[in-house]
Length: 257
Ligand SMILES: O=C(CO)[C@H](O)[C@H](O)COP(=O)(O)O
Image (cartoon, rainbow, N blue to C red; front, top):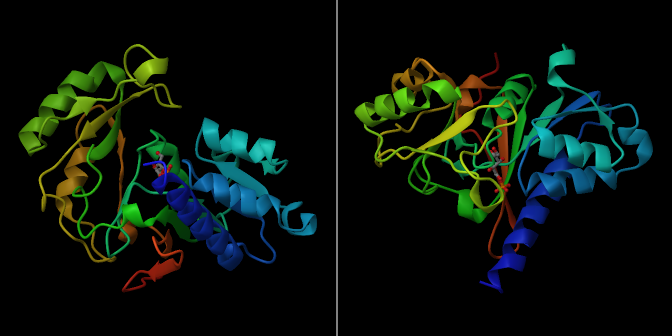
């Protein structure tokens, strides 16, 4: 394991640097900054740009971690609730990405704000390493689909998810640093809901399949971590590969709405 860690970190960094180099607009006004360990390198790259390219840009975070990254890099912090203008671009990580660039997100429990910021952008640029590539959603990322729920409704949502076909959905725990459940930046719980292979249908970029939408109609579900490429503006994904290259993918079909 000691030898694979630097490889993965360098894969993340290569993907993030290339994504910034190709998508940070010359006259940027506002940029969304997502969450996770890969986005750290996005902010690192942005902070290396000439100040005149970043001085007038407002950076919109997707949670506390991302807010701290922006502040510590000396960049100008904004907030999605204060911001009405479409963001030029949103950079974010992902837990699993299928060939249509549909994603599972929420491994870091930030999926609600990530989705809010992603839909507020003109385009989404995903940065990840090769481990995130997946032929079909919910086959590679073992915990399944992260779902943010109002705490009072957690048991009800668990039972609804089981009857929908999720195998052993669980409330995410805080781990060593927190007794009891993981609490999101919005004060909610996360349920991780694994689904059997094929449950989440492979969708082309223009179709939002009906089944996952039923997740949203469960009382108590705030948001789920399936990011349909068709729900958003164009998506481009940068994957740092094992051989040191970066694989750039765009949606097979672009729909401009
Ligand atoms: O969705 C997320 C947080 O909710 C992250 O973007 C996702 O977990 C990827 O993180 P990392 O870059 O550390 O693998």
